[in-house]
Amino acid sequence: MKILDRYILKSFLRPFLATFLIILFVLVMQAMWLAFDNFAGKGISVPIILKFLWYTTLLMAPQALPIGVLLSSIMTLGSLSENYEFAASKSAGVSLPRMVRPLIFLTFILSGINFLFLNNVYPYAMLKQLNMKINIKMKQPAIALVAGSFNAELPNFQIKFDEKYGEEENLLKKVMIYDLSGKRGNNKIITAERGKIITEEGSRYMTLVLEDGYYFEGHRKSNIPSNKDKMPASHAYFDEYIINIDISSLTGKDVEKENYTRQYNMLSLNQLKDTLPTMKKNYDDFISNRAKNLFLNIDVSDLHSYPDSLTNKKLSLNLLDNFELREKQTIINSANSKIQRAIKNNDSNKQTLKNKRKYLNLYDIEFYNRVAFSFSCLLLFFIGAPLGSIIRKGGMGLPMILAIGVYVTYFFSNTFGRNLAEESSLTAITGSWLSVFLMLPLALTLTIRATKDKGLFDIKGLFIKLFSFFNNLFSKKEKTT
Image 1 (cartoon, helix red, strand yellow):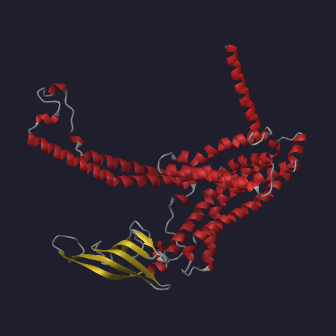
Image 2 (image 1 turned 180 degrees about the vertical axis):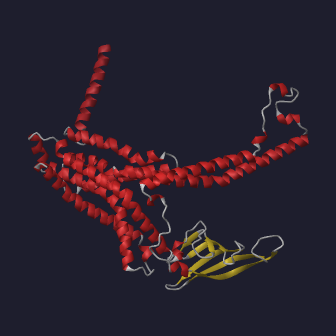
Image 3 (image 1 turned 60 degrees about the vertical axis):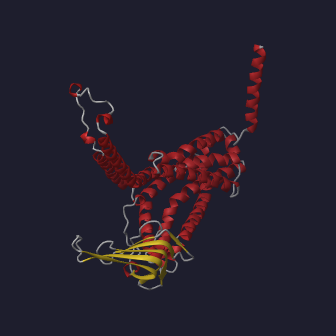
């Protein structure tokens, strides 16, 4: 390795290590701050918190690496340009591409490391951290309850409510509860306008106080449902109703127990590649079954084609004209009822189909995004390096501002593409690579301008070109006249 290559690498690695560690620290602290509510008041030991911190650090490292490459490349080349070291090298016959060649090789290596990290370490860290987060939440089930859907985490109960509010997030609105403790299905239903969750640290019970509600319970003589075993139901309105739920099975759960192992961001590329064909087949089978049910509901199989020789010429082409008034009404009512039934079936299956497609898209996007995001180090380097040589400014001031602007653009375009692909507005591969497609022209433009030693915006050259264009235009008009 030549002295120049060692000098360039040394000038790059110092700010890179510093910026990478600072950015990683900021991202980890932000993630820990958002997860702080999961640990507060739940008796979580310090070793568990440190493990959670370690897994969070592993998750944030692939995001911090591209930012570190971008910022350090702007700082390094900006500092070399500011100190006229590039000018001295050019006067000695060393071009800009030759000077940054060792940095290009280093960036390729960093992109490969980022890919290996995303494919191997990231899924492992996500598996551990997500399971740990869920298990810690279950230490205090009141926090784990989500508004708008049935929560089945509590033993022998399913709870649904419209809103959770209050300083401690323990007040509920529009509560519906299925009491399954009798092991006879959802025979016991309780609804209430308001509810309050009361939990005490160390207690094995969670108390649910309901106000202004209605209680219904269907009775049977045996667990096997039949008309003979039906008994009169009991129901009542109440002003206040208290339920004590045993949560000892949740609070005593191992925090590090792995209950979820097949989520899309917990799988490597090989595992995703093996999982996707099965999921796509199940999705296609679901659509095929819905289509078959639709054809069966509207009796398409009863329609037959007849040869022209068997067609009755006396029949009107308007089918209803061949029937009496009463028969017409019967046919129209039957057709209308079948259409309405088919529409209701489609409406009921619409959300299920959308959720299945969205769930499949998440796996598909993750597969392509792992590869696309690993190239972010290389892409951002080819933006940062020429940008630094153009602005000719080192340090943490202007380079930091430019790096934030570039990365925010890259991050939002990546998120935007993923969201579009998740909603099936774009294909998974297009949505995952959208940020690369948008930022690549900028990288090429900056690299070309820096190689030709041009400024970021050549306003003077632009005015000269416009002036010459209009000058030629008017001169042509004068010649024609």
